[in-house]
Length: 509
Image: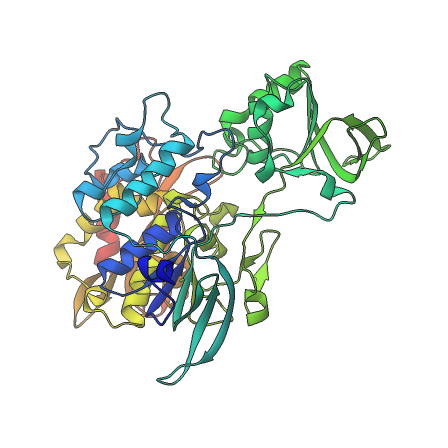
């Protein structure tokens, strides 16, 4: 029993339980501490880092950090250029990532990202009970009335009225293709050199599939990538939707006949060959005869899903291949109140998806802002924290400056376009008040922190052309008006033209 007392957070009751020690869990824990909310952080891992302790397989992230940027590290807008550091109020705990990079690339290596997260946890004093695996969840009557969650773990039972799950989307997703059990999932990929002179068949044509293909180009004899839908490239979609530009070499090799085949086809079945290796039968999407591939290796780069353990049995509804939970705009389970989702699981709240583009909630540079908004909401509505309820006054004659500043330097708006907004309420008696950052969907449907009274929300949006532009949502007398501003290639949103339009908008309010 000594080990249970030597480690933090022994089994028992806590105000909040946070599950996960990846970037989502760390950001949530830090934010809870800033509001003085006691909580326990539980993690099955042996140290902080989450999925970055294992992936990406070829050790280089897709998210950049630019050590030398147009603004200094202590400027709020620097977060636009640093997609990997977590958020802190203390200057010494901000922008940790650029100080750990070796200069070989502005895409940090996986070990650098792991060190970044470990450093953040150490510097900010985040305590975590490692080696504590979440195994189940149930609800029971609480001693003071109502219900509470009982979180079952490998160390014992924990109780809390609020649970925040930041466990990532890290459970391998495997389709029901006949013979798929013969394939190796991305998560089990071996060292690259073990594929030397092998014929490799990769199922999946998204980032993970192309990452493996890129890393195996110098080793594999042939590489085939197959999935029913054509691969989309991010350089064509002008967004993070699609395969990132770093992985286009297999596309070029395919076009030039360099031993790579990219195929639009569904996998019919996988089987073993008598002489060793495998045979893969694929059905071309465009029609025609089945195709037979004789290969030495089959890798399923078929993605991941949310590891929700037994939550569906508790009543948590899910959707999609990734088995994401159905949630409110504030990331609370739509069917089980008191259960919240942080980190990459916050992508479950899709937002407005203007022009069909998703937010960046599935990545650190988006989820970190969601975590702050989530915790503030919990601090205000569940713990009545005065700090979370503060609404600083904004001078009426400074509203134009307030909105222009939000457009220019609010990094949460830049990274979470058409998803998060800066809001100022316009109550006639209280005067303009800064409501802080609010999910745009909550503002639009009147469930934000400002309610459904008169208010203005400022956000940034982007369309399929790659243009970034400000949009102001003005609510007056229960009617919502959407005002779109022209994009600027240099992202200058404080020009005289913009300020004049803002002044007209404020005057109408």
